[in-house]
Each structure stands twice: as structure tokens, then as C-alpha cells.
Length: 137
Image (cartoon, rainbow, N blue to C red):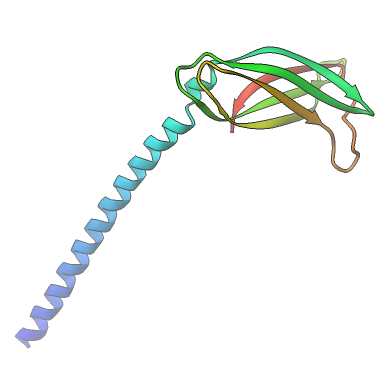
């Protein structure tokens, strides 16, 4: 009987030790993941992107927005999108388009292209004005 109690105690001790190690490992991995995410997708760095120039081209009912971005950051900026909001004459939002940019190197410039069309219609929603801005994923 004492042997069975000893075996059960060792099993329970092992389970408690395993659970403790598992919880500790989970906490450490969570901290590491959060630090890596903040370094890769840094919201404050996204604010350092400047839209230098942009214009709209309309061809066959499809609006394409072309422009230039400049990074004013000392770090590479990863994971953001160029968004275009389309408005009617009353200032009502009628559509939204975007293009994902994976990386913009520090202190560099790059061109962008956002095509606005509905897949089922193959044309852009009628609009009068637009606004272009940068947003995180």
C-alpha cells in the first residue's frame, strides 16, 4: 500500500512540475511574440510615412490612384496599406480601396498603385472626391 502511495505521489509531483513548466513556457513565448510583433509592425513608424504625391487616372470606368511614398523613419516599416476613400458630392463615403505594402525601407521612397473596381462590375463606383491615407494592417 505504501508503494502505491509513493508511486501516486511521484506521478502527482511530475504532473505539477509539468504544468508549471508549461505555463512558464507559454508566458515566455507570449512575451517574445509580443516584442517581435511590436518590432515588425510598429504603429509609430507608420506615422512617419509621407504621401508625397498622388493623382487619379480614369480608364474605361476604372479609377487607378498612383503616387509616391517616402519613409522618414530610421527603421524599415513593415505591414501597412495605402487606403483610398471615395466620396460623393454630399461627402458621403461610397467606397473604399486599398493596396498592401509589405516593406518600405528606411529613408527611401517608393511608388504605389491602388486600383478601385468592383469584381462583379469591373468598374469603379461613381465618386466626386477621394482621400488617400496610410493605415496599418
